[in-house]
Image (cartoon, rainbow, N blue to C red; front, top):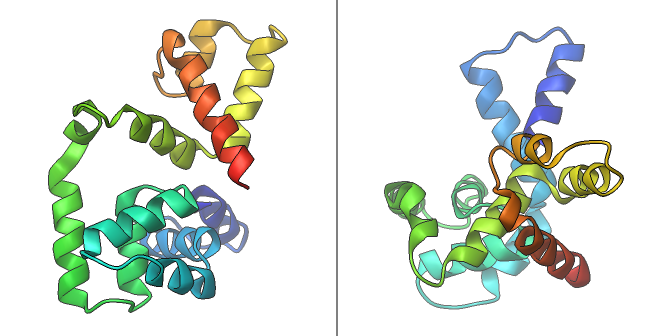
Length: 162
């Protein structure tokens, strides 16, 4: 969605820059997490903000960072609380996926990052032998070949929830 925002701006002659990045982030957030649905999903659980952000992240199949930013920009929490939550998520960095019990988050993040349609397209091309395993891995930015089945499984689980 973010890249679609860039294409929409480019068609209208808007040059790429810091302002367009912010606009594209907001555009993607609004498309992937519409305001009314976001508010309803955010209100479902109670408890710490980070738990609620995780719930939004899983529901919309986006990264926790994207969920936290969207929640903050939608004004569902005070800016200082949103900022603290965003800082906490950013501080977790790449190491979050390497913690025990967090591998499924890796695959969900891959699906959120690439989009389920793109991943299905790559797998379809692989299954029909239009691309090789190394090419598919490169298209998925380094997802290891031996992890393809795990990614497929998470993709199927996500599709079953839709």
